Length: 430
Image 1 (tube, rainbow, N blue to C red):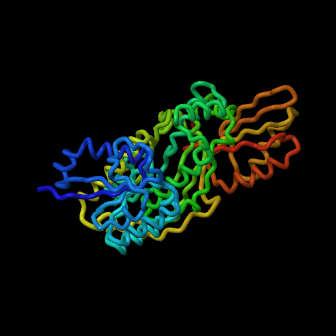
Image 2 (image 1 turned 180 degrees about the vertical axis):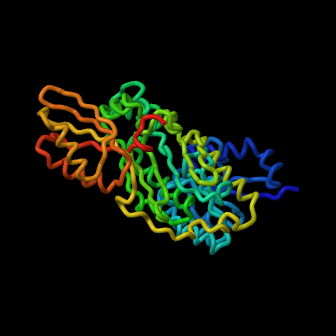
Image 3 (image 1 turned 90 degrees about the vertical axis):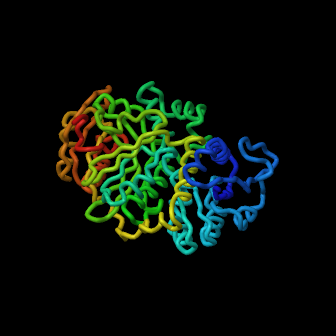
């Protein structure tokens, strides 16, 4: 006879309804595979009068303690979002010995240590596959399949909204504002897209991924991020002309034993694996001297996709011993965060200047004085103005920062220079 496992849920929106439907439709498979029969409810919602397709109306409650304080609940799924009071509720559940599955990236990026400590104290489990890249099982791969692989680099497209916008800007020639509007119309972008286009969403996801990959506590506050909201269509077009594809990347790597995590636009060589990831898809490239490269690709958002990852975590809990997910200690390495300017990178540099003799020579001299080498130069005259586009050789970022300050001081420079990271050594193709 199968054991009954009761699942309480915080949140009954799109993802919560998807979770309920998947569990209902696959109940026989789940029971056969795990030996457990899942029963859903209670389900916490804000407004009990709204219809919730897939959720039994009799299981709906507006009282948090009907879920949190229920001795019959074995696992709590959190799909309501927000940081407070969600944090307090999940800490209460974990300390009481109730395992938790959450899709809440902002909560984890800010309070993962507290939640993990509560889980350890209560002998419960905390699972969060759905918090990053929805249906792509990148967290499971990092925590289980590649636990001993000594990951050196995590680089990826972890925000589908920005990837869709940049794809349309490149393929259809749309302006940023037009592509954003289309993304909103299709449901890829929120009415307020700030978290996505400003890089905050990707930063939260990279904080989670880098914490797991490098076994070190990384908070969203440790992740400097620049979005695509200031990116200009001209630069996307020029990059494409030069053989690059523009992407918003999350980049995490070890630098002399320290952890560097950032989110920023970058030019990706056309033959790089990430260059082919278009539309709203996500992809994460994992690098290690042991396994070389592994790339995981798939839909990074969507109610059904996220619900699928949530259910996968529930099944992992049913199939593991209590506390096993925490046994390897998620954040035990104690690595420091890398200092700004300590990394090497190639760069795309665009400068609008007065079209006068000797301007290119003066710009080149400023770069040379800072120890920055030029790989490629593209010069175009536009009446009394000229546009200089350069690909800078890979080198210390601190030198490029120094050169940028000197370039801004040149009287011939008309506008703020544009600087974008380039993946690799600056070559458009290998």
